[in-house]
Image 1 (tube, rainbow, N blue to C red):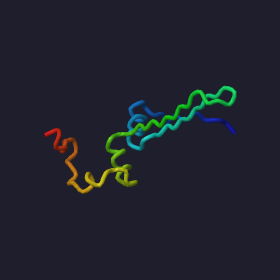
Image 2: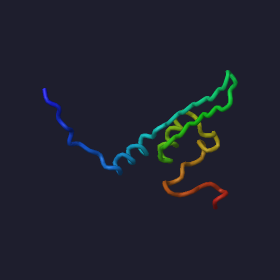
Image 3: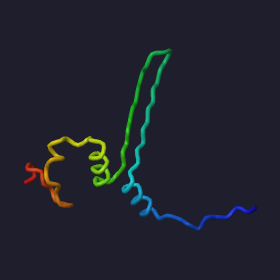
Image 4: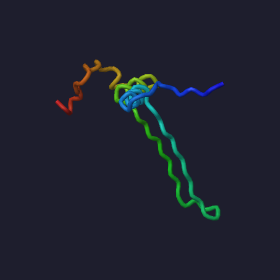
Length: 85
């Protein structure tokens, strides 16, 4: 049995496109304690995704406010918020 090197490779642009299309979440938690006394706690959640991917996800799980869901959806690339008009 021989090991074969894969000739399939992805360019950086393909990797970035896939990450923006699917999204990626990095969740980190760190706690520093000294003699049982908590000195420092760090919690972080980093989400990397395109705006379109985030909006589709947020709408599917109900994270968007009702006032935005009832409005007519704007055409792609146009801002329909009254404060920007």
